Image (cartoon, rainbow, N blue to C red; front, side, top):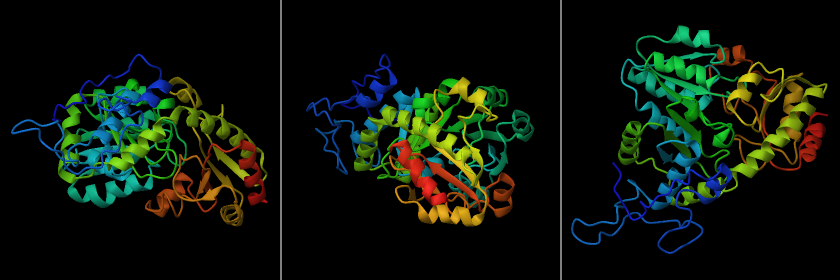
Length: 392
């Protein structure tokens, strides 16, 4: 367990609304000096006051005040018991799947992020764990995939990049009936739009690189647990694997969180406009966006989220159109990642989902004409103008 420390006058600020919680964090200002910007404690080790008396901090691999402020803030925002900040989203998932034992089975969303697929298939399957992938938007398929050795259900909703929506409440009931842990990757919507723990999930994971940090300048991963009993595993992962987020990166993520609410509102607003425009373009054959009323998961989305987010995928008419778009964008940046202030366009076939076997990609619809766009917070018309000239 973590040591008691001088910062344990921790006020969860549960009476505040989300926007205020994000701005003020767990402690907000640093309680000893009153520093309004929580300091970067760039120290590897911490002095003991005397024999058998410490400040509660021993060594930054175990705990660091800056990282602790981020972890506690994320626990507040997600409505969880404890949060944990890792060196990347992949590190967070490595810690998560470290809960598995030989013979355990995990059921995951079928168009899971390629990095998650790689962890499962290239690392943990070799340790004797079993992974199956199903369309979580169809509860009967999930139920059919659950066996007596199923330990965990891992859900992306919306999925990356096909934008399928899973009913978290419904899956939670199924998970509890089969004594499975329910994990939700909340990267796309963040706790501003969706709070999986309140819907029945046990664990939430994030690529903190994306919307939480929000500025394409830090790599981070976040885990938040609902039950304090789950916290010990992640404490041990940080202590033993040494995969905790560094103080400066923790500070950058804290700074990003302060504007999370206003950024997510703008991402959402812009995406609605851009998605509608894409749908009318003659070279765009299909648009995958959860904010469309005719999206198969629209009603579920309304029931469990307060917004649609900034992610859109779409298929164009030809491979040539796709390549022209990727080559000719000007303001929009052709780059891997998502969730930053800048609009990014990504080619899942060779970037985010290159680890997925080609037959699976093709079956999902991730083909040579498939594009994913993370809509930024620029002027919506500038985004549209750039897409228009690049599409030709």
